Image (cartoon, rainbow, N blue to C red; front, side, top):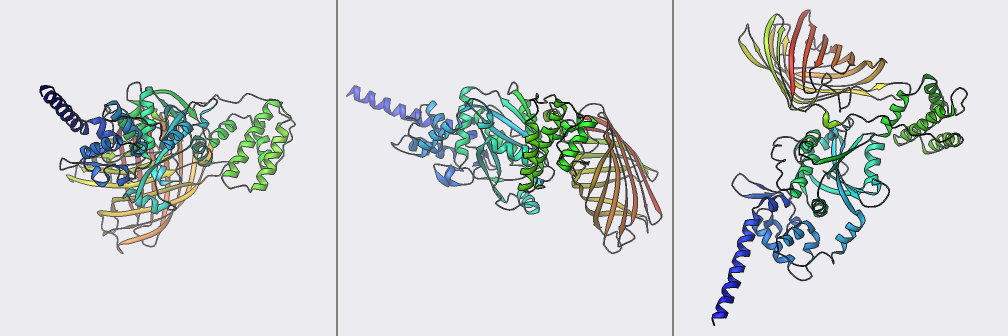
Length: 604
């Protein structure tokens, strides 16, 4: 009887400890981050994944970490239960806590997945900005599951978190993406598809950052990525995007990391790259994979004038005969020409028949020349060394002989006169920029302007490439009514397109044809519409950046018709600190406006 009582007490004590351990584990960082729970404002919890299939306890599991944990322990311990096959990271985690028994050997789909990817490491991928897509203005981050297969990582697999938008693109995609109108899902694809999409089709450079994870962390990362394929998470363009969800994955693998809490309002891919960079010893080997267009332009920039002339003959006239160049020099020309024909075909500027004729022609001529060593002497500018995205500035200036102090805040991202190191030269993307002024003579503090979005993309055209330059400006700003000399707020919007040319030594001139208008109470008819040709100059010396332009607006109201001059010069004290001098002059209805300022800018 005594032995029976002792045994009963022992069983009860074991069960009690198991229940207590499960309760403690349910609210540990390990469990909460593995299932992506977040505390709510009423001290409860809520999982990021919205679909019941992501939880064993179905809908209730999303709001109750303890209930979900107990449900998983129960299900995973049942004979022939397949739930553990859907959630290998959770099963392995509970197995290490000795709360479940068994293994995943009979999980055929999971075993097939592991045999296919053959994981041997995790690499973070960053692609530079794609100015033709509003969802990619800030770059993009992905994950590569490195493979054990011999040869090349082209046989590896990549993973991307993106909006399941179907066939919707353009304005509707951007609008619904801002408001959370899509489910965000994880996808896994062969790495060569990622290379083809970003390197070859969109012509975006790819930077590969190998993550120094232990063997157990690598396995947990792949297992968790496998189970995250079933998650449907509300996608927000500025918040829960590709970059934020990579941070979520890293926290699930290393629960001691606290890297998502710093992003409350918006998440920019470049910022998350720098967040990961700042984790001690996490980033290891770095590899640069330039896009096809980058390679072509690099080759052209390094050609002699004779080589460039031969290249133009080859691509414009399909003339592959050489008379003046050495075999090595002409081999370089032909290899660049072949890359150019591929670029033109993918860009849909060549029909398949013409592409075949030209590419076969250049290959036939190339086959008669000796093999040459590939040019690998350019390394690119590492984007994680670029300036930080958020900027504040202070300025002192004079507007129509009234002195002022100005304070501005720009949450993102970059201006033409900011440092372009690691970014796209000639690309400006400013979001939610606000400028506040205090006028000393009037003792008045005002919001001078608020700019939700301002984009300017200047890409030089030449004899080989003819890209479009464009601009977009959406803002609210104070303007002067020249009729009564009163100031008030107007809503401004404009778009424009044109061409940019490199005159010499990266001295760019550009012309844009813009259409736009304004709406506000200080305008006689409340609004005006018009066209505004703009001519400008841009030069980036490195530490010194210059931008100036003149525009003439022809509007259907005299208030909108105006001639304006803008000039700005910047000197970089460091990558994140610069001083700028700006000048503005405007003429409207014979009334002149003049503004000059000196400012200090700090990025962080």
